[in-house]
Length: 369
Image (cartoon, rainbow, N blue to C red; front, side, top):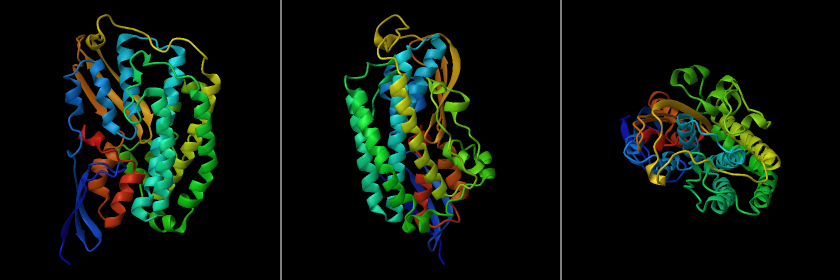
């Protein structure tokens, strides 16, 4: 059989992104895989070093389009640490609303997205429709559906609009009501089981070798390594939630953990609505000068949050001027999206490549950064 070179991407189905994988195949079996990044947004780190501190707020959400708010959060945390800024109490809780809504949105997109490579297109339609209701909430809170630029150094850009908690409660009620139907249609369906059960395995040894975190780590090792628990930020230490784990990481197990995490996010959001101060400031001013001419004290810091794909961090260096001196991004999906594809995708079938991208949570701009 002659070896043939095929191209997976670049394309833009939203879930798998503008990312190209050159696959050398024998029949329908992948013999060699070579990731070829660079087809999406590129060079974020250097771009950030050439923009004013506040000007980066419009750039950084694009490092992961489908989960943009983690970038705003970790960037703001880094600046606040360097400038020794205390975030107002109400702002901490509002930030948790944004972050958990973002987690629900990307998990809903991933669980629905598995319908594409498996032929279960009803799952995709349901997932995107449910995610759209979450984007409606983002639009009401921030004025935008995708790139929000809402979490800013010192707090959040503005307070919550009137009546938004009631709208949030309605969306959570509907999502919680629909989740059993999603589980039955997607996670228990024989078509899905045939395609993803015992497929795309991620052994614990590979987790440690590649440096995979998040659901990849927790599904393979049973480790409850969630930064919201082990190194809390915002007010995660004041809410109760569980960290779902497993010890056998196939594609189906990872999808199941995403489903379980959605229940935990709903649980967190209900506690936030109950415990959040009813009023108060939502932003602390911390630097003189115009909004685009802020300066940040010299120093260096690493801050990280728990994204849907694992530890997501920024290493920030300031020389005390109006622009960052150095920024390095620890993309949570870099390990499985670059090294993992090259080393472990060979041996699987052509139609398994998209399942790898979905269940491993590959967000391609994190690699193009």
